[in-house]
Amino acid sequence: MRIEFLGTAGGVPSLYKSVSQHLDTIQRTGPAIYINDLQLLIDTSEDIFYQLRRSQIDDIKYGVYSHWHPDHTVGLRIWETLNYDFINKIPQSKKSKIYITEQQVAYFKKYFGHWDHLNYLSELGVIEKEIVENNSRININNASIEWIQLAEGFAFGFYITFNAERILIIPDEIKNYIPIAKIKEVDVAILPFGSNEVNPVTHERIHEAGMLEELGEVRFDESVELAYEINAKHTYFTHIEATESLNEIQVMKLEQQLKQSGLNATIAYDGLIIQT
Image (spheres, one colour):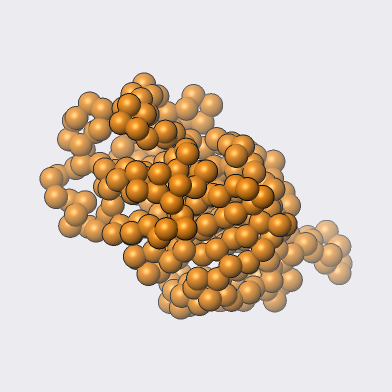
């Protein structure tokens, strides 16, 4: 299965500090993941137009959302940009199928006019909405995709099985999550990086002590602990905040530290493609 990290930044807005460690992608952009084999897009970041253009992706059959937060959703007009026929008098538009959980419907109705926007896109003929239960399972191209509701009840991860492969994708919001048995020892786990109050390599202080706990934000060490519990063959960390500013050398050292401690892990960057 071919998975592309379209964007690996976190939710902290920054014009200048969201720097990637990878020389080919100097800036990190908002969180989004594309599964090529399924033509499935997970989340529509603020930067999704640029991300899809860079990756030359122009035909997406399916879309799902991890949760309602703006860094994961406000690019949803991309469904119109991708699919609407702006040329013919009688539009011959493409259509993507968007799956929304019952829990997400409530939040999409409450925040940012997302539900109204999705209804507009549906009326325009560029998407087809399907509301599913919070722990639903669907099949796309011989792959099974199951929603995993997190401890933060508004957020979801995705458990994907395809042939003999087992893949877990949790884009964000893993605070206090206790992994269920079925998602352990997967082939690939994609997890949020979390945040640090102290740089994990240089040990320089980034935030005031106790700030992350006060905000209810997951710490990097908590993400690592969860990764150990899941015990995937390979773990990829994404959703990296602008305030981390980890450079290429620091990321290499961090990955080495994780490997020495028994965790086979990669810090993802925009444009990273993995073949499971």
